[in-house]
Amino acid sequence: MIETHRVHTASAHYTRLGRQECERIHAASLEILDRVGIDVHDADARDILRRGGARVDGIRVRLSETMVQRGLNTAPRHMRLCDRSGRVAMRPGGYRSYFGGGSDCLYVLDHRTGTRRKALLQDVIDATIVQDALPEIDFVMSMFLPADVDGRIYDRYQMEVMLNHTTKPIIFVTPDLAGCMAAVEMCEIVAGSRDAFRERPFAACYINLTSGLIANAEALQKCIYMAERGLPQMYIPLNAGGVNSPVTTAGCMATMNAGTLLGIVLTQLVREGAPVAVPGWNGGPYNLQTMVGNYVLAEEQGVATSMGRFYDLPVFGLGGATDSKVLDQQCGIEVTVSLMTALLHGANIVHDVGFMDSGMQGSLALMVIADDLLGFLRAATTGVPVEDETLALEVVEELGPTGSYLEHPHTLRHFREAYYSRLADKNVHAVWASHGATSMEARAARRVDAILAEHRPPSLPDDVRHALREVVLREERQLRGDRH
Image (tube, rainbow, N blue to C red; front, side):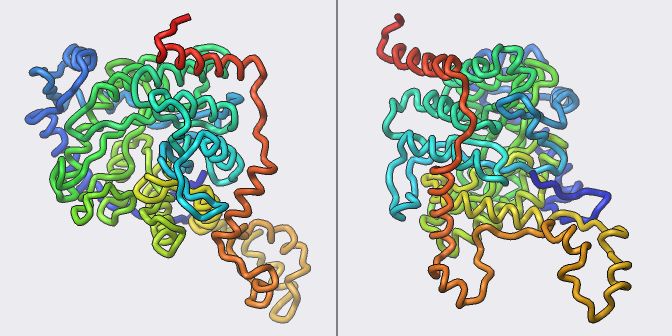
């Protein structure tokens, strides 16, 4: 976890939108909701919104400012996610930032061969183990969409893997309500009961909607299901500026934000106090040169996060990703910039670390590199304690200009506080050459192999593992039409 904007010590400060700009975007979103409305493609969601005071005309739903304000008043300002044992591991909110992988890359940039290939279930296992081992990675996502399982229930296999191979909080993605229900069922098995999981949730659902002005049925159904149970969710409508919304950043953000506000209203109508996170990326122009959904674009950096901070709600951000296909200079620049802007703007749950090629490809070596970079960013943005012990005036008086500070007790007390990279080579050329003249990519690949060879997350009890397996087998039987 990295925290910025702390008051008692100086730290990094940055915001893309000032309060006046946020207020104007909020007002524009309210006007869109009241005059234009949003297409809501689920009858239950429309009924809930209608009973809450919305005007419904077919699938078009319009909300008043009063409804929106009511929803904002009851939506929690913080979210709590536990580890598998029930210990609180993440408290997203404010300027506390947590980092993790992403989900559903179709391809792997294989760290052993340097080639791109289709992802398999073993890659999901490997990615989960690597995320579990890395010290700066706070939560786990599946990373890959395996090609060697039934694609209709791929998410059930992913959830089984994650529950078996990490103790960290999990962010899961499912294509439909049935998958969401199966994921929650598996979590309840691990927790011991429905109540135990609700009281100490160690998994949250990432719900991605068609766009700001179109709420698809599958997303709405998952939203209602999670809210009914009081479980955390990320309600994320995303726009493509110039394609399905205005090309200008302000116009794109206003329409996207309207969809976010509808999600907040819906969750709070279902259950007041249901935890929900809002988008922390997108909200800017699409790449109209390539018509590819890029993950790192300049104009959208920090815009959505600034709106989330304006509402003081948990923000689901994006960072540590690149649109490059190889671990080159573009990759290094985009990973660094996207992590830094997510951190400085105050995104709380920052996903997609290790993503490449517009989300089509993932790299475990890149995840290891990003983890090392996060250690640097933590050190670079942490406030500097200025007090008697750190000013060390007595030591300076004792040793003066010519004394040796190297063996002094003050140095021995504090030298381990500095950040030392695991991957960056800081030696002189001769020493670097004597160690094999390796690149960071090669060193990262070696570290991935070392983690996979040595790291063993605590195992679940045999009966719990068998119960999880039975859920997946049951889903397979249902696909075949065999209910027995």
